[in-house]
Amino acid sequence: MQNILAVFIGGGIGAVLRYMTGVFALRFLSVNLPLATFAVNITGCFILGILYALFIDKPEINTTLKLALTAGFCGGLTTFSTFSLELFEMINNSQFINFSVYLLLSIIAGLAAVWIGVNFAKVF
Image 1: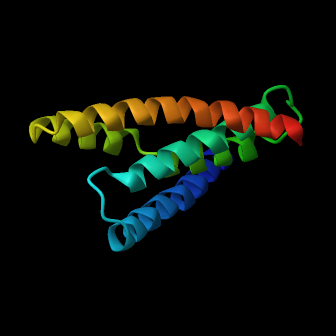
Image 2 (image 1 turned 30 degrees about the horizontal axis):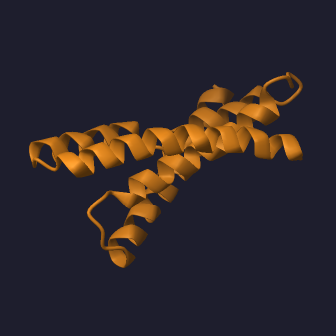
Image 3 (image 1 turned 180 degrees about the vertical axis):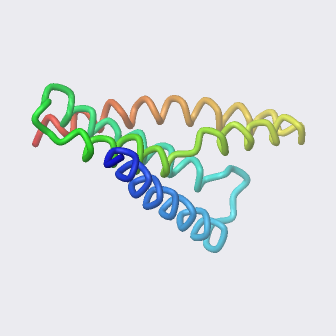
């Protein structure tokens, strides 16, 4: 039950941060790509990379804390379903160039952010 509560709280915090990023993007940015989703997904990849590097060989770190930060916070922050829907809408609206750019940029930047996060954590 403690693990479920930890994921719930971490997920809530991540989801609120994702929502606020979207509000900020709509208010201050004017571009054709969904930058808020992109930003939270890449940031989530970076954070998850750091956490992976910190937790990988450390069974002494509390499992509940690990779940709160990974499945909870990072899971609530990142938005694969929103990402997929945005890609679907781009196809439906014949925005094939935006579709290609967003898809490739998200995958490449996501993998790069995980790699950077892992290596960043190794420095500390």
